[in-house]
Image (cartoon, rainbow, N blue to C red; front, side, top):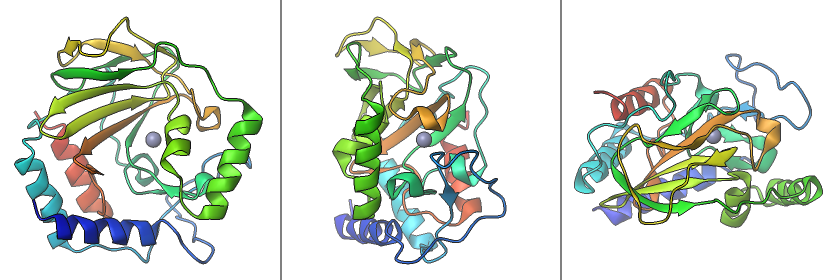
Length: 238
Ligand SMILES: [Zn+2]
């Protein structure tokens, strides 16, 4: 794997995640409904070349990413709205989205997206308090990025599935988890939990789904919306 290229990619993503000036408003994105709602804005400064996207695709192949993933919520559709895709800015935490969002009702079933082994299941999850959350989000905004510990708390109750070869899927904001244990093997379509809004209730009920690939995530660095949509759609193509 061309580590240097991935490093360059990360550097670009990090820079893009810390805009020095007020971000512009994307006309495609509606205004937030409350002051604490997530604000999704594009980052015009960060545009990676096709070669960087090719690099991600090569990395996927090198890591033997499953050729396809099952949509993790029955009846869900692959999103195309920029605010639901990786890389859209999350101003409320000074960071960048690393997943794919599926808006669904609370309690909707969540299923494994591919065969794998459960590597994390938060059966004893406890919600963090609103004051703690607000303080952490203030801190992240001041820093201009979201530290990993805070990001993990924002993701709330989670299940992670390891597919081997450095590929892990993460299912976040769950309201409950299925009776799973670390090490359990799950098959695509198997129930693993239920949609919720744990970790960041202001975001409303939805499944936040990440496809981690090595140290990065599917779609990382891609700022061209059509290429990003294609990358995400390809991941779910039968
Ligand atoms: Zn999300």
